[in-house]
Image (tube, rainbow, N blue to C red; front, top):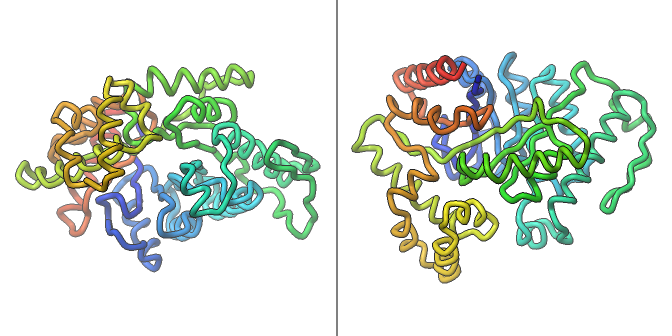
Length: 354
């Protein structure tokens, strides 16, 4: 099976311009053209310090073949109509290259960062996507807007605010998920699933995909073209000496994720529920420096793909082929030598996964 290669552009990735600062928006177009030239299938961006729709518009304007996507945009702070318009505009600009990845965010952020009332995210997201599709149907086909659910009632669309039909109206929607409820929502209404980086192949196969299938059956739909898109935890470097530092960083990341209650099911599935609970207590006590020591090599390799540049391509394929349909990764590309190495890696994965 084919695995698409996508590059994640954002602060948490060791990518083209990896940084803890916001992206340099003036260089997004240049970076996107480089990603296209390196042979990647696509470019995705997460929502952290920059509006992902602005970033995708800049990338779409600068490229011609590169697929584009949000990985992910946070849904609930935006109305379904607002998100529908942002996606519609980028799809029109990019001539059909855009995928809308949506995520729910955890309770603390929904209540304290966005000022919203909390509601169970699975049913909420299911209704959100249905409402958004009703708006798209109105714009594309002239269907009267008449959607009513628990969270949204949409029944007004006047000509001034109707952008009208576009050439590529079928915008794929992927939902970020860890737990079964969100996977069921994805199976019910979405075109794909975006497992969190701590979701191992075992967890995806045994928990996430069966839950998505349950959601699809309940909705009376098939998942024949359903996509699994994954940004795994990766530690890679040119040689073994420089790899050691990357491994330390990823070990700390695994410890942090294990301490987060929302991600606990992915650790419980490997018999690590007690470890996750203990690390949670350490995080509450702000004992961050002690947490990576709990992540043994066995645990590290369960949740992360580790290897030098000449090893990492095959190791990604060995882990994810047959489980995911697109895989997102990056390495530094600061000069011609690094860009050549990255181009070769992309080609290797595309060739061997075909």
